[in-house]
Length: 312
Image 1 (tube, rainbow, N blue to C red):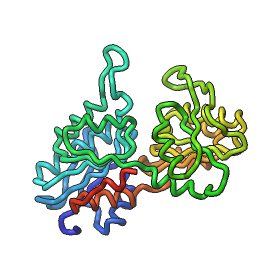
Image 2: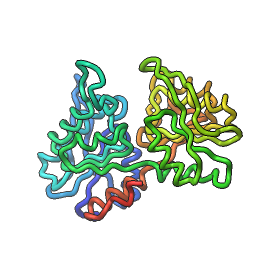
Image 3: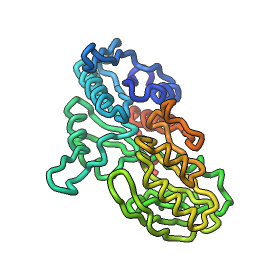
Image 4: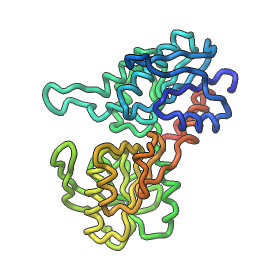
């Protein structure tokens, strides 16, 4: 495996790439990814990749445009260097929230980015907790869609034996929350919310019994933290003893950290799919690693083994 498998990364999340390489027992590929003086992305692959099975680890997180362009240009450079197969490993898939035409004259950016990645030269995609599962169908190349559930569930097993309820912060996240509830053998609750605008929501009703219980909110992404904090506050008003949150992608944009600080959340657990910069670190935010899970998927893809057992 160490002879043919090669892992490269851009500047989006180099620490995650290093951690994955450590689990795989391979060295990180040698490439320069920087910028020209006017800001254009400059890439140079400094090792032979002819015939190699190459994995490019690059979440398209903020700064989204720079990280997306780094991914596309890295893939193009590797394709032109005659790499045998190129897999784009995208732990966080940006531009995913515009996945359909929900109003006139708007783009479907999730499909546009899928086309860009395939046209750049990627042969397959490995990603995690897409904002909408149907985005897999936007690609005309194979997609392996992992879930961070095993990592987050392992963290929340510390509440085994406690009076726990798993809660979805909105109706759309019920399927994800139900999977957690089943694995943790806990009941399910739902917060029925009404969105005011793109930045804020108003929680309306809590469906399910949460009084005196430890409530764990489950979501795929925390951007401005509006949904999560409103849900947490609603749960506290309904008598929840403590409120925690398990989120795959911690974007933490805009007023997110301020809202988390003022909310009823005791702790929010996120994965390292997106790096948490120094200015976004907070006592209530805990990070768990998905490096081992991604490394196992990469190893199985490389060895042409089934990855389906990881889709839980």
